[in-house]
Image 1 (cartoon, one colour):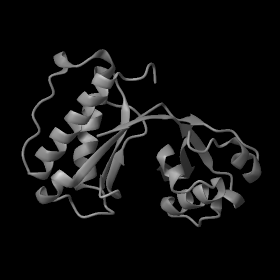
Image 2 (cartoon, rainbow, N blue to C red):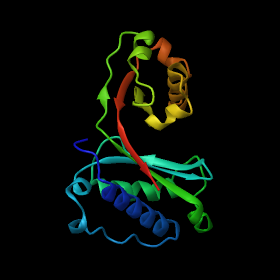
Image 3 (cartoon, one colour):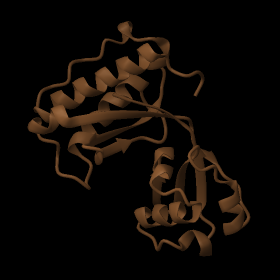
Length: 189
């Protein structure tokens, strides 16, 4: 991540996310993005996660770990996907829109975390700072840094991440997994 977004850029992304989500939930076509009106930061390739909450409870979260489109398009795409395609939840209904809060997390590129064993891995994680990806063959899972608020213990964090990946929670202790970390710039409505 080059530089932090300005408050105006953050507000613009939140507005774009809400507009896209509302159009998607209502089954309407999302208006084309006028990139000429966007700052360079919003036009550059970027990856994001969009998290939807309702009454403080998770309602959807979808994103990408690697950039493949402009940050503005990435946020719009994931706002719609978080509302309609998160397999953990039914699609957001139009009646819910006013109660939905949007959070955007802009990600840095993931970097491999080199470690010797389970204890070394625990010592190298930075709780409340690192987003973490674990991979085992074709299986992978990630937790944004915000998840540390709910799971502050690094061993529990890794166990839950392995479980999310579809593996036994203690897999990280018995097998050397590919681990990557990233940082986020988070902002919300």
